[in-house]
Image 1 (cartoon, rainbow, N blue to C red):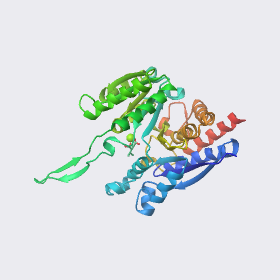
Image 2: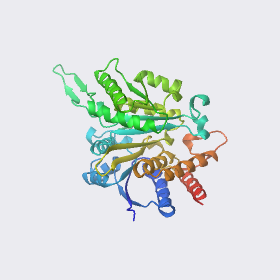
Image 3: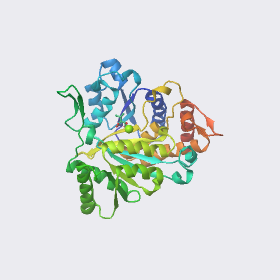
Image 4: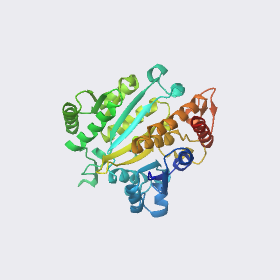
Length: 370
Ligand code: IPM
Ligand code: MG
């Protein structure tokens, strides 16, 4: 008998809980209609955890995340927490999860659904059919580098310090993920750094070249400076297949790539760790969008990014490609039918709420499975 999959749900703050409610309905649907069964557990993270426990991530919740087969994460943050000291901020909960679970590989696909070609701020011909993968290193670089801090100078000024640092192994393991991903796509990798001004960028480039030569010689490898990449992403995004880059550049470039698709409300992501001895890998799935406090609680948020994050969970954690495709196809059908949440609204389309979007996707799943 197959054991149940253990899934920890951390809905977080802002629109997190309301979009997660729609995903839960879809998870229930899978439980009822498909072979896969989930043991779901809930936890608090971000501001929601701070309000109850005084910290954005408790040790207990972290232990639950460690024990889960996969974590489905909503979003964290809100203006009421901006006054908190750095270590108590909601974002620290997410960063601690990434670090402690060793989630070094962040997959951020940017794809344009045909029905949404006009939602992009770019010309339709530039984005139609777009399907690129940004692979962001997630546990190193300037986000975690030491020394860091704000210090007082003798003359009364202050100095803020962060450190960009990467080691051989950190670069090689993310490069391997990039080449493995590319294999299942067009087998093209573009490595992005600033080796024209940064030593860490020189090392990055050299190590990616090494992994390419020694392990993946069949892949096509190119290199680009990060600033040029930002420009190329809006000029001709379809030139890319897989982009691999560091933590900070990946943060910025993935927002840029996300907007090519018309809405942050559409994009999922996966954060993966190393495969352990049992062949298991820790994983966390989250939408690229944030907690959107300005629209939270109004039943207008787009649940699709969260739902597509669940589809990525099915695919990457449980190898359930067919089930993942069911979710993706349902989303595509509902969009093609003209239903839109406010963020992707277009003239002539039908504007629907978060819950009605959830209803429509469930109906579509029923149809497909009939
Ligand atoms: C992201 C976010 C986070 C980051 C924040 C919330 C810490 O912008 O996941 O892209 O900078 O990594
Ligand atoms: Mg970001």
